[in-house]
Image (cartoon, rainbow, N blue to C red; front, side):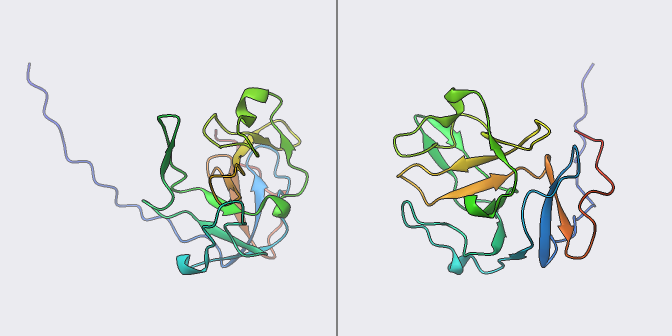
Length: 160
C-alpha cells in the first residue's frame, strides 16, 4: 500500500514574546528572572568571545539561523530559545551532572542543558566558554515569558 504524504502547513503563528517579560518555570511557576526588555535588533548583540551576548536588562528571542555552531562535531543551535545574561537569573541552579559543564573557561553548552529551577526542572543551557559570547539560553518548553504585571506563579503550565 502506497502512503500519501500530506503537506503539513502550520496555520498557527505564535504571538511575539512580550516587550517586557519575567521568565517563569513552567513546572512550578517560580520567577527565574527580573523583568527583562525584549531586544528586537540583533545588531545590538555583542558577539565577542567571553562578552555578554545580550545587553543588560534585556532578553533576545534567538532567531532561526543565528548563532548555530558545532562543538566537537555536535551541532548546537539555540533557535527559539530566549537568550539572557547569566546574572539575570534568580534562584536558578547548576545541573548536578558535571558532564554538562564541560569547557575550558566555562560550559560550552554542547553537552546538554545545565541550568535548573529550584524545583529541579531543567530550564536552560549556559554557554560561557571562551569561544563564544556568554549567555544562558532558556528553553521555551521549560519556561514561559510572563508579561510585565502578570503574576508569574499563576497558573503553572502542566504540559511538558
